[in-house]
Structure formats: C-alpha cells, structure tokens
Amino acid sequence: MITNVLGIETSCDETSLCLLQGSPEGVKIIEHLTYSQIALYEKWGGVIPEIASRNHLEKLQPLLEELCQRASFDLKNLELIGATCFPGLLGPLLTGLNLAKTIALYYDIPLYPVNHVFAHLEAIHITDKVSYPYIGVVLSGGHTFFSLVSAADKIQVLASTIDDASGEAFDKGGKLMGLSYPAGKDIDDLAKNGSRSAFHFPLGLEKQKDNPNMSFSGLKTSLRNFIQKNPKIAEERLPDLCASYQEAIVQSLRTKLRLIANKYKNLPIVVGGGVACNSRLREVFQEEFHNPLFVNPQFCTDNGAMIANLAFRNREKAFASKGSFLFDAKSRLVDKEEFRL
Image 1 (cartoon, rainbow, N blue to C red):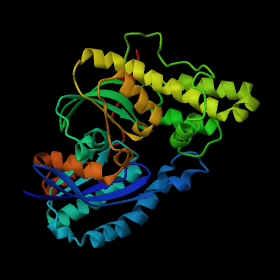
Image 2 (spheres, rainbow, N blue to C red):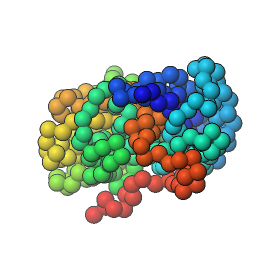
Image 3 (cartoon, rainbow, N blue to C red):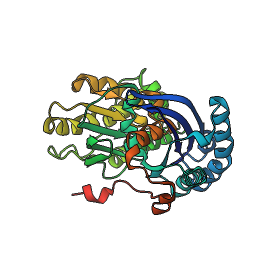
Image 4 (spheres, helix red, strand yellow):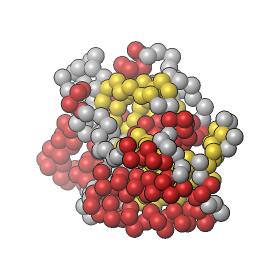
C-alpha cells in the first residue's frame, strides 16, 4: 500500500517541503524543494529568528504551490502530513506547523509532529537499511549528542555536549578566522591543504576519561586567544589553522564516541546532521569504528525529506486532523544542564 506524505521543515533557516511516497518496501521521494536563507545571514554571522520567521512566511505558500505543480499532485490526495514540531526556533517552527495544521484540518488528513533532530538520524532509512537498536550520533549547529535508538519513535540520549554544539564550534571558529557563515565547509576545504599538527588546541573534557559528554566552548576560547596573540600567523597560515582546529573537534568526538561504542558493542553507528558531511570526520570515524553509516549529504542539513520519512515511519501514531490542537511547537530537546557534573 502506497502512502502519500507531505513533509514540512522550518525549524531554523531552511524552508523545505517534500512529497514522499512510502510503502512496506521503503520510501520514494516524488518532489523535494528547499529554500535556504543562509545568504541573508552572512553579515551577521548567524541566524536572526525574526527575519527567519518572516522569510518562512513569505516562501511557504509559493514553495508549496511549486511542489504540487512539479509533482502534478493535489493536496486532497495526501494521506499523512509530517511537520517539524521541535526543537528549533519558535517563530520559524510555528510557521511550518501552522501550515501543516491548516492543511490537515481542511482536508481531514492525519498529522504527525516530528522531532527534527531524531529525523536527522532516521534519514538513514531513505537510502540504507539499518536494524534497531543502533547508536545514533547527531552532529549539527544546534545539537551534538550520542543516543541509543531502539525504534522509529524511541530515542534515549546517552551523552551530550554541555555547552556549544560541534557545528556551532565550526561556525564560531570560522567567524574568528574571518570566514563566511556557515563556516563548516570552508574550514573543511581549507584544512585539506593544511597540517593537522601545526597548532595544538585542547580537547574538551579530555581529562575525564570515563565521561562521554563533550565540550567545545574551551576550544573556541583557545582559538580566540591564539588569533589575538598571533594575528599575522593566523592570517598567513589559515589552512594550517583550519586543519588543527578541525582536528581538535573531530578527535574530541572520536574519543567520546569510543566510550559509547565500547559499552554498546556490535551495534551499528549512524551519524547524521550537518557536521556529518565533514570529510575529516568521515575519514576518522571509518578508521576508528566498524562500518559506521553516514546519512547521505543531501539529507544531512535540515530538509523536508527527513521529516516526511520520519512521519511515515510513525504513521500509526499520527494525530487525527482535529487532534492537531493537542500539540504545539517547542524549542528544546536536550537540557544540557542534565549532563553537567
């Protein structure tokens, strides 16, 4: 049996819609459109929530019309809607969620509220077959944690960053080095021509050998201090600086994930989120762990396909259209205070 699913993602700075068909054999993407606001935020070096919300409002309707036109699809033929409900910026979340509720109520279609961070992990099922349970590694601009995923609706966070996320460390570090936002890809590209051992940067919580939690704020401070003391070296040896800084992030993740992998032996490891695209991270993880699985790069950043996919995988738990009044957007997933010693 084929299920037509609409996925809506507006948790931060991507307006993304996906029309997907799900069946017992898997999922098939019919049409997938994304509008990114990243270019708007280069001068600020980060997302401005109010601007993001207004841009989502402006882009959602025309994007939905184009999606249906390209797919020759009528919304009345939908059988399920998935919309990001949490975590994220409240304003942007509400724009997509309210659109989803409107369509659900008008056409009487079930709606599933999606945890978009969990969707980053479960996006692995769009292209690969992975059995439960597995170790889920989320590495993004807003979240960095290790988890035990037991089912399509069951995730247990095992360890987390206690401050900055890994993607945040890339972006803030890039800003200190004068790179554009977001800085992850630029650092990755520049690092390929640099020496990973040129400069030493600390690994967060390195001395806590049995603690799988992570920290990246000290690394960022160390980079700032280095640049302030050595501005000419930082400018002239930018590839070396990028390679050394990136290596500190990657080795910190490797060291801490090893603790989790040793505890949950023989489980598959799935890595998702924007940082999962980093070439050095992939290289190190493939050397360190047995056959880690990485979400396809096109589904690593926020996107509607992963939202539709997770909704389909939880279709039996979707709310009837009028039940959409029972839930609302919320900003947080992981309370970092819980992981601080």
